Amino acid sequence: MAEENKIEDISLIIKDLLKVIKVVSMYPADNPLPTSLRRSFAEKLEWIVDEYGELSFEVESEVLSFEDEVIYVSKSSEDNLAGIFYDAGITEFTFVPGLFVDEIYLFLDAVKDYINSTDKSIDLINVIWEKSISHIRFKTLEDIALSDYDQNFDLQDFLSSNQKMEKYSKDISVLGDSEEYQDLFNQPMHDLPDGAAPADSQQEPGEIQGTSTNTGNATFYAVTPESGQSSVLADNEEDEISFRTAEACEAMGLDNLPPVQSVPDTAMILNEEFKLSKEDEKKIEVLLEKDADFDPYESTVELLKEMLHQEPEMSGFYETVTICEKITSEFVSHGKIAEAARIIKYLKQLNSLIKQERPLWSERLKDAVTTEGSN
Image (cartoon, rainbow, N blue to C red; front, side, top):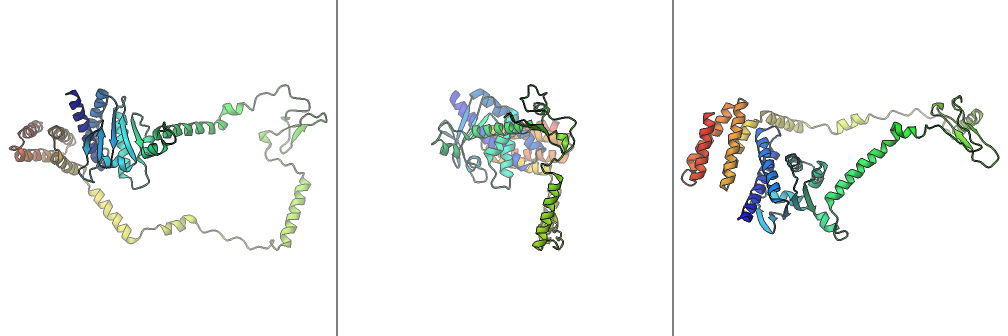
């Protein structure tokens, strides 16, 4: 009996995962519907992982399995939870004990970014890795392919180790700019070998100072950073080189070249190249108008209706009705009385439609209408 309850709970949470991914991906983060669903799902998933321990799911194109038992089968290409992971090259994902609500939020955000991205090259594994989610693990096609060479290879561990190496490299790169690092080279010098001498603090800019002997000891030179540019050539040698260069240019006819014409401004060229056509501008105007007319409260009401019709099981239906109650309260608190009334009205209509076939479902709707109508 306990095992049956475990399978049932896990099957329901997987169905809820598809539901919350769909809603979170469609609506902005500040919409009350995805906010409520995210919180409800995350708390439930956290409890299930704490209750049953590590949960691993095998991924096929349209099927998810848990402990060799199929717990999810896709009903359509539009609502295919298994396909989201399968298309990303994931063959198995695991919820690890210690998973907490904030990590689940990050996971849902990663899936949302992946689904809504127009960049076809985006990789779901990389998106999740960038969010530093440690209690949801994955196995990928790369893991299977590379296991022939290293049975312990794990792509997620490899990405995490690369992240640590990048941080270490950044720490090393800034070391040369640190005061502690520079202080290493500013320590007083003691016990210099014969024939070596420290730089004279009174040296003139451009002057190289040092002392050498013929005893076989190394010659030591020092130039202070304040010396500015210095040259190993005497002034007369530099003048001689400049004179010879001028003679060579004159002999090759390069002394009377016309002035170089200015190069056209690259930014102006690109502006002209990527300028929108009139047709594209009109399309963008239409999209902006539609976006301005978008009503998140109206769309939330329509989505709640759809969710109520899609629930095949009583437990899922009860939870959706609970969400309707919470959203109605949110609407009232935001002064959206008309939209809240529409939800209550629809619950009454649905109650009358299913009263004969599903009396228990009808009772739940009746309770919701009574509760919300009295608030």
